Image 1: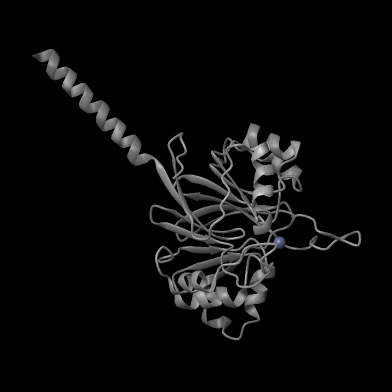
Image 2: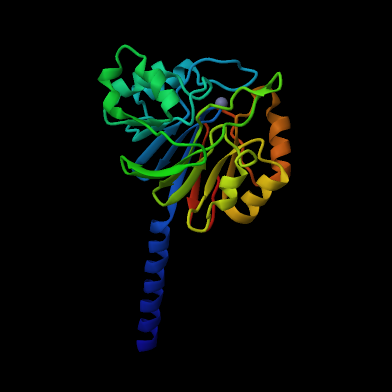
Length: 287
Ligand SMILES: [Zn+2]
């Protein structure tokens, strides 16, 4: 009888420990908006990144529909109680100053973080003073990084080169300030590179210590398929989840197939407002 009670006690302890592990696991919900725009949710934290913009060519990138844009601005679930809106850079397929302004005016608790070039476009708006306290410009030199914690979200922000775009032998995107966000969202490490790439910032990624700065989810440039990028991602960074971004809707199958050839487990989003949830306790789970 004593033996049975002991066994019972041990199995109860094991069950309690197991439940504790489950409770400690960090769950994150990723909702696709358009192009490189995503809503990230974990616990009480909600972050919108590169999601507030409103025009552009359908061939090159997806744009949030008017309905989705209104939902975001009006804070209709899942877009209620957003802690942070982040912008990687000023380009109009990532950021629109007046859409961001409409959002901030309706949600005085939400903070915006972006590079000075994007924030300057907001300063030009007539009503900027109404929401200027909610706007934080992160001014960095190329390849420099800084740490910030805003509304409960800790992040390392680096300024890395925007991927080159050549016109008549000149890289027209050379001076675009592009911020890379490495968030700690409820214990999950999330990196969103904007239009930067591992291929175009080799020195930074070579020196980065990914043991200390874990990346569980990488929102990746679709161009990071070459040998250098692959070695950084698969041998050093080792994210559980890789999500390619900026996929032209008309070339979705082709671009996705090329990316998955290098990263077979990559997850490409296609349908606006599609959500996937992941759990990190050593294992990633995909709905
Ligand atoms: Zn860009």
